[in-house]
Length: 150
Image (cartoon, rainbow, N blue to C red; front, side, top):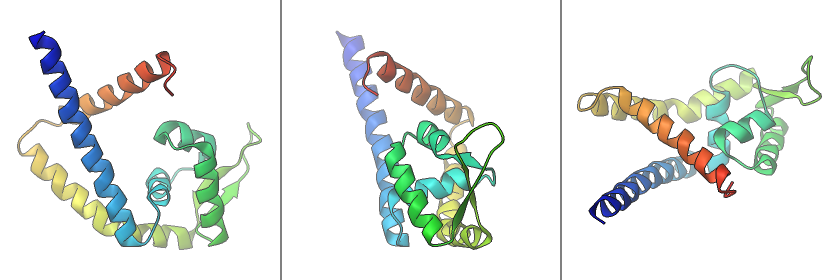
């Protein structure tokens, strides 16, 4: 029974920490004057590569209809454009120059805060903690899919 209690306590602590991270990004987005899912899309496009709506939906676990809504909004404002691909009918999303400037302005302070938090964390823990979180996220998603919860 003690092992189960320890596991439950660990999951509770991890879930609370992850929710605090999600909440921090939510309030940060609100403070910056954008929707949380708009911020997520800007993060997804921040690598400078083209991404399809399906890819962003799958990788970021954002409903495709939500991604589509945000894409329409940002395209209407001239921040992104949709470009065709050779191997698919689905178009890829890329930031326009105006969109890159918008994303940089929105994310400048966020990135500085993230770097600060990461440096402080790395002063206490090895970089492998990121690998552990990624592994947990992947395994949790797989377990949810296996149990038909996603």
